Image (tube, rainbow, N blue to C red; front, top):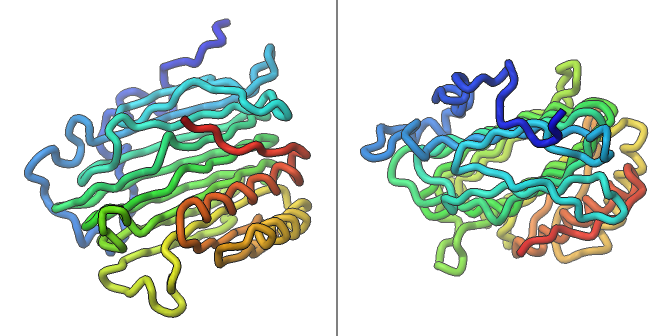
Length: 326
C-alpha cells in the first residue's frame, strides 16, 4: 500500500460537495457581521479564487511510527506543505505549515479548513505568516476552522497573528471536537492593524467564535470575542486599555491533568511577565483558557509559546524548542 497522502476525498466530503459555495459558508453568520452584506461588483462570493479549502487527515504510520498525512485536499488560496519532523525529543511529531499564495483575505472570501488527527497522531500546525484581512468596500470575509482530535492524539494549532486592515470585516468560527482522552492546544491572536502604516483599530469588525465538544457531542466550552473598534473604544477601561494585542489560548486535555497543568501554566506565564492576563480552569475541568493582552504580537506570542512548553511538559514529558520559520 502506498504511504503517500491520498489527494482524494472520503465519502463524507466528495468532490461535488467541496465545489459548492454552501460548503464554505458558515451555517449561521452573526447579525453584527451580516450588517455588512452586499452584492459585490467584481469577484463576488463564490467566484474563482474566492473559496479557499483545506482538508487534512493525519494518522500515526504503522511502519515508521511517525505522524503522516493520510489524506489531503487543497483549494488555493489555502495550501499546506509536506510534514516535517523537527523535534529530537518527539521524532514522531509532524510539523506542518499552512500557506496562502494570495497574501491575505479579501472581501467576499470564504475559507474553510478541516483538520483531523487519528490513531495516536501528534502534530504542530501553524501558518506561514500573519493572516492579513485586507480593506473591504463591500461585504465581509469568513473562515471556518473544523478540528477533530481523536482518542490518544495530540495537536498544537498555533497560527500567527491576525492583522485586520482599515475597514475590514472578518468572521471566524472554530468548531473543535476533542476526545476526552486527547489534547488540543488552540490559539488566536489579533493585532490592532497595520500600525506601521498609521492604522490603529481602524477595522469594522473582527468576530471570533469558538465552540468545543467532546466525542459524544457534549459541550466543553463556548466562547465569543467581538471586536468593533469603531463602535466601542478599545482603549476604554475594562476593554484593552493601553494594550493593543489580544490573544487567547484554549487547552483541552484529560481531566486528571487539568489542575497540574493549570498550576504549571500559571507559574510559567507569571515568570515571563510584560503582559496582562491569566489562566482559568474551564467548567467541569474541561480544560484551561488563557487570556492575554500585550503591547506587541511578539510579547503575546512569547507567552503562547510558554503555554505550549508547559503543556508538553505535563502531557508529553517533552520540551518545546519553538517554531522554525524562514
